[in-house]
Length: 244
Ligand code: ZN
Image: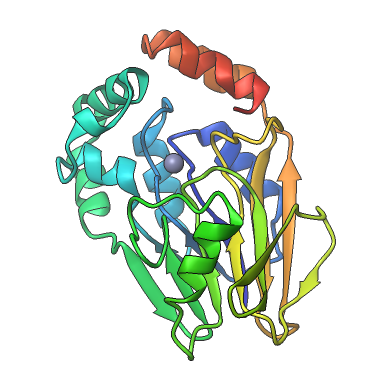
């Protein structure tokens, strides 16, 4: 079976639509690693669009904050303002959808989490040291782990126990899933933070045993215009065109 692996949509419908169009016909199920809402202008539309497809979706820290399951004071001013706007904006259906999302899921040989195996909702795997600590937590039946949360597409490879390499994705080129254990981040659909404003995603083919990172251009101005209309923080609007 083939999976569309996405994360951190953050209520950016234009970006989600671009990813779905770009990968059309290349997958059977969506795996979404959390943060469906927060930051962006289209929380209800993104939740509805996901549910039109066969999907397995996790909850992230922003989803939890919107539901009141995390203290919003743990977030910076702009993120907090967007969370409060999202709380006022989501419908009962969206709230119900978010409530039912699990924080992690095991689908051998893969483990799926938003942040990390050690802290599924909150830890950022940004460096090789943190990745090594998480490889140490991996169970035998799941040598591959999919994570989101950092908004940075990356492939952590365990060379030997305790030694980890961090590889920048080679976009459009499938990588074989082999003997080495991997922590894979598809990057963010709706708010990339690696200086590349294009929406990020990955395709996972469990028959060919390959993973492919991809990027796709989307109409950023459309999302920014909708954010302006809803008076979302200016800094959150600006950052989309720079990819940070
Ligand atoms: Zn996020």
